[in-house]
Length: 335
Image (cartoon, rainbow, N blue to C red; front, side):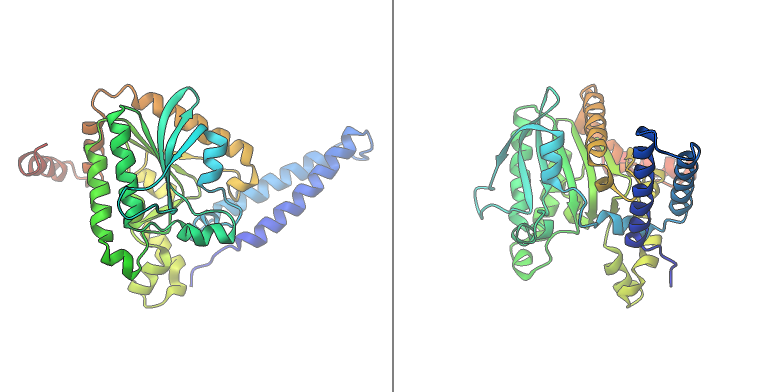
């Protein structure tokens, strides 16, 4: 079995230490502290504990933080990062899928369209939104908004946060895999800049369907994978309790994916997750989105840029192999 830290026990420990630090800070501000060095010693101790714990983080600990019940969801990002949001619903055929939220908003002074997985916050909202797992109509709604954004030459920002597309019978009967494929294909056709933020969970085709960005940003404790650790463990080891081992082998953390050139930027989080300092987390998300949006607006051909970016993912280190693959791509998949 993998040796996994208990995130919730660590959180209790850090909370207790923070309370002591804050108490000593209050005493010092009131001139009541007896030992002037006591606060500095405790702050250094807390910093050392955090460094030691973080160095022992297992990939599955990142998965646990990504699923933390207090972690911000799409509604929080819309309310605290964007302004003037106007929701656009439905795909004009089957109906509206609450698992995907779309609309028009402003990022600083830039008008943008938003497409994101929406898990909801309360239990009732989570049930209504199917825990952020879209049905086919959700992907068709996303495609409709992609077309509108493209027609108005307005940048698109997508927020990924889903365990995966809904795997139910009705979804499959309505062509779930077709809807996902069409969404991916549509994103490669767009002639506008697309910025993608992997907020928490990035599960399989449900995530990739809105994840074809010119720049892909990822929160430090998010994960992005072809399958959940539990699903992989069930298939590979016939034992879902081996999810931590699967998480390690899947290379699903932000640090793994940056090394593999799948993502472009890791947005650092407070220790143990965004919910520990929401104001700073929202500010960091906003500043990074603005930076990469302004960068993407300088791209002469966003469509070609996006295509080149994705076809280079997975190249081998051996340059001779890369050159041969380039020739194959040029001759067989001319664009």
